[in-house]
Length: 355
Image (cartoon, rainbow, N blue to C red):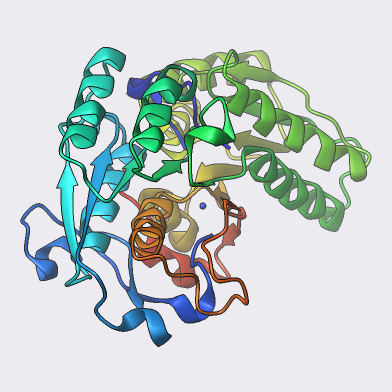
């Protein structure tokens, strides 16, 4: 993973669809009310299929996540709510989202005291919420750990999240293959990272570096921003000023990318192509329109929250994933990072989140 220790306000963040027969993609799009239709109108949801489509034991799923101050986090909350609304046998019990560690601990303890059937938790900080998850587990409440991983597997029944190293590999493979196809021998490849102190940023950059190396390329001008549009614009302006010529640029996060694209437009630069990260709807619309330097993005989809809710229901009902031989839900699921280009953007656009 993952997104772990990002300050929630700066969070940035992939492939989903678990277990074929267990789930099938159904709808997308939006939500603020409790109604099933409204909840599904802007979110990514999947409809249970096969044996798991039948109504089962009534279960209550507690849900805790950071405050929605970033497009990706907002989509996480919307997707979880919308997915829960797909099931007649699920009562969704979210607690107030917060970026305060102490408040999230207190909120999850409320869910423990209510004896919910299962908890889905995206912690502000996996390390600092580990003890609380262990407390829930000790109370007989399974925990589905969403994205930012706890310190020990003992704290969760199942972890589901993205692949930051894989994001970098996907971006590096696209950049490398595109430059090779163009016959560029010694390209200048820029990188605008997220927050450098975060393991997720380090993993993304390492994946990018390793993939480029397989093409005989390396990273040139590189700066770190902060997963915000303002930070992206500021850092991109500096990088563009320091690098009068680029052949390619990878920006780690599509929310941040709004600022990066603004800086590129302001500088009047278009001699290079750019790859984004996460898979926002904004970025995908730009890729489809093909009127900016942004030609691809690599996914880290908040649809993982929808899948986490489906997994929580199965765990609470002691069911497995119907396409798998095993009778239990797996203990760990890492989602892959797809590369979205103009050629396949229509397939992924319904899964995009608004930055």
